[in-house]
Length: 155
Image (cartoon, rainbow, N blue to C red; front, side, top):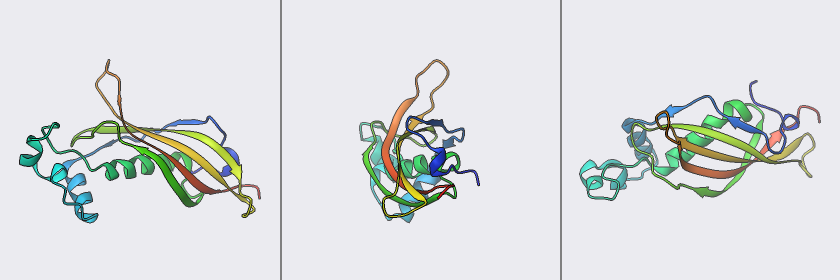
């Protein structure tokens, strides 16, 4: 199981996840269809051409889902009992078709559960960046704080 256990997590631990994902127009259209979001800014090139972005933008909830999903292999795969909540979700810059995102996760806190022996709560800060060319700084496009109920290896 590649995920880490509660007792392997510590405050300040940083993961620069090696998996990156290029988001295609098909990804965005499928996600919008599956979530029943018909917003023209995501789907209609003619409409989007008249906006400040000049082209369709990726649905921000797709970006959020990818950001969390990319983090799973290195952090919580097979050791999460439940996601307890997400807060402070931000999207400071748009994502466009063809952008590649990378993700960084920082462990903010770790504590044993008061009501569930052998489990505990880990709070993560996830950040997604659009990867730029060499010599350019990557652009922060999403962030959130996530609390997860996790299994401990040692009860």
